[in-house]
Length: 317
Image (tube, rainbow, N blue to C red):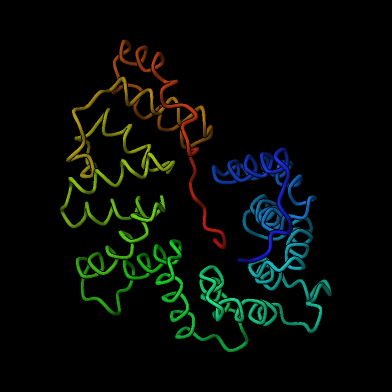
């Protein structure tokens, strides 16, 4: 595994957990003060996500705060921070360079490759991205390491392989072939407990006309804290027959009060435009007495474990 410095004390770990929760529900600005506590205690992962949080505040661009945190994370051995520094032109524009050169992707490769060759699945997965960044990108090597990571049990790599297959119009003749190629990878990651793969597997199975199992996995995604899974539970309770709701085909008997309670709880736990829009969109589909009942039972859906998240990719857009 990549170093995250030393173990955090309970209070600092709790702050980091809260920071990661807030980052996971797209509240990067609020997350920063919590993540700073862990970063200042030497946690490289918190340093990296502080870079990500500050970068998201400028819509995926780069600012000085992001670059400073990425540099600290890179000094602690975080390879994705090195790739972000390269993206931001840190060496070329700001003279923030690796210790022994001027090539951040090469520094990330030199750090990561020995760990991958020693059998570290996380390092194997990082090589997938690194090999697209080095001076001579090598897609074949990138895919080789991604496969090795998945075969070593790295669930994020399994999920990524599913997404690659689902979108691969060159290797597969039609949508059904792509979905059938993606399904085993999503299933393997879903069965290992990866919430985004559960969500993806539900969608694939639904499009392959397997509604019962699709509903099983969207329910599991909700139980694992995936916001999309939780939203489907609510929508199928309120308006299962609306256009585009084929995923509701195997849902239980609708209960609009339950659906309203779920939407209220989502809005409480993940406040923002999306949850407010859902409440507005479904308001007139739920009778006043059903909305009152939903308010009474909302607490049953609040603050479940694990907490709700969008599960953003570590090295995403």
